[in-house]
Image (cartoon, rainbow, N blue to C red; front, side, top):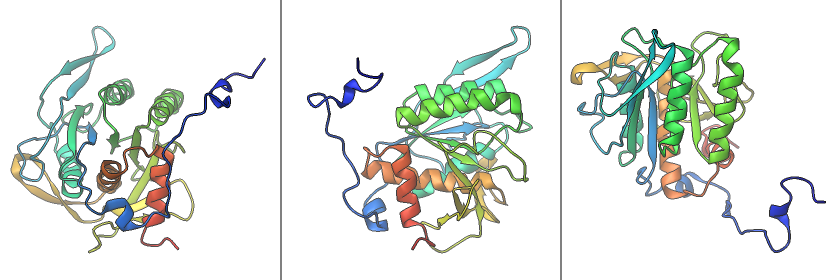
Length: 268
């Protein structure tokens, strides 16, 4: 009897798969790519679709909250406002780098930019089931009791070919899912005139650095603000990933990470 999972590798069952047939360069990865055909879910505080920096193609979104009476997550599909500004800031960064991508807002944070872990996990699963190819997670949880749940969802995304881009915590303490190997973890670097502006980390837990220090971001009411945080660095990488996948849609999440490493400014 053959071991489990091995039937897919029988001589008459092996399927051809697309691979990376050349050493990735910036031209190979990004030239002519605008994010078209790629849906990016922004799991955050909501997105102001009317902000000049965000206007463009949108997919259906959802707002998730915690019902104290039912002690369960409730989901309301459809449009919703940004309750804080953080989600709009991240969406604006993604839009600037991948203008033709389709953005989906999944609101899991309230007006004070906090939320429950159960709502966060449910929002991540909603995004995964909605058809998003890239999910921007400029939020995380440090509660160890959620380690297993988020690890499970992160693995589901990885096996489904969905790229999770996660901001590292702004303080030096463990957070999830940003520290899982199955996601792309990002911390802030200085602003740069280089549009790609990607630095590869020499050692974990962060995989990459991207602009997130004193960056001008979209905010509520059509305004902008100068902000600092790993959140904005993650959104930068989500935009880059959307561009890569719009040109090379066959890439798996681990291949996307390899491409990002190859095109990083400090790669050699």
